[in-house]
Amino acid sequence: MELWDLKVSVASISGRPVCGLAVGDYFEVTASSRLSLPAGGHFCIYALSAVLPLLAAKQRPLAEDDWLATDSLVCCPDPDEGLVMRIERSHLRRLDAADLT
Image (cartoon, helix red, strand yellow):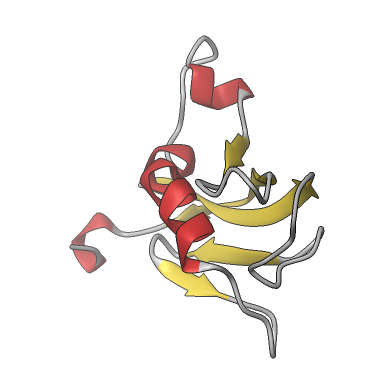
C-alpha cells in the first residue's frame, strides 16, 4: 500500500497567539502513524484536535474531484486566536499492510 507522509504547519494567525505557536511551526506524520516535532518544538493539543481527523484521509490516494485533494487549510477551534494550519503531502511511502494495524 502507499500512503503520503504529511507536514502540518501554521499558515497564519490573525488573532491573539495564546498557544505559543508562530507561523511556520509544524509537525510531521510519517510511516502511517509517527508524529514528530522539530527538536524543542511543541504543538497545541487543541489545534492538533482540529486537524487530526483529516490526516488519515490526506495520507491516502484521493480522486481528483475529492475536496480533500484540493483543500488543505484547517482552522483551530479557538476563534480568538484565528490560527490556520496547512496540511501538505511530502513523500509517498510504500508500506506493507501486514506491518500495520
